[in-house]
Image 1 (cartoon, helix red, strand yellow):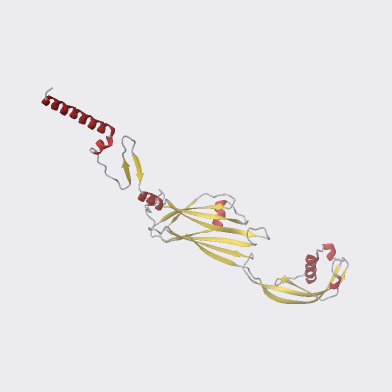
Image 2 (image 1 turned 45 degrees about the vertical axis):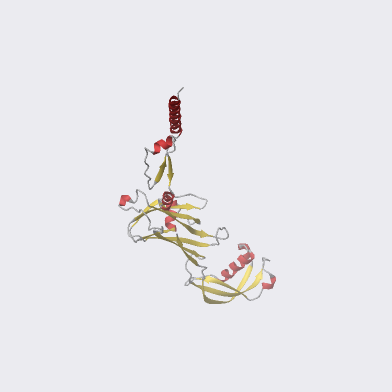
Length: 297
């Protein structure tokens, strides 16, 4: 074979090898070929990534996650309440009369809608009550309102929570032509909610009372229940009195003895009492009173 024929054969074989290599690279790397034809424009909300022939994958940016958590649909306030009376040692608090008064102030310059309901400790939950608050106005929730929504008109002791919800992105707000897109930046306390608590030991307010001081002797005791060292000895007892009321002083002294020594009516009839002296004094009922104010955030 001549030299020029050998040289032509080498060129042809080299061309075949080069073409085969390019074809194999293109077949096994489709992404490279697609990238030359596809142009992707990133979005502010998400990014779409195409990987070979796999389905599209959406990745949410960290900014979107922050926006979704920092813009709540509603704002909730929870306030503890205590209503009613506790007698003796029945608990859960010490004996007394308890009351709660919630004050809710709309400090915004537009009307708001709020929903409130009551949850009783270890008990029932009431239906929600809808209240429209005008701009810069206030409303109150008392123990009377709490008992009304629960259908409980007794004086028994109740305690639990009042839950107040203010919808932000709701059909309730647009129905009045007002939408709350973002509650004042970082300040989400669009309402001012305060709870005022009172506790009293007495059923009524403290007042002055008239007291009779009775001095007497026990002349004779046929019941045998009075200690013998008290017989024919000057004794004193102070009992409440009422103006313009006729009362049996001797019977007042005997009733005091009956309470102290557990005497029956028959026992009292066997005791002879002589009144020595009666004096009138004025006393004051002292009330164990407590108040407390709490701001709900």
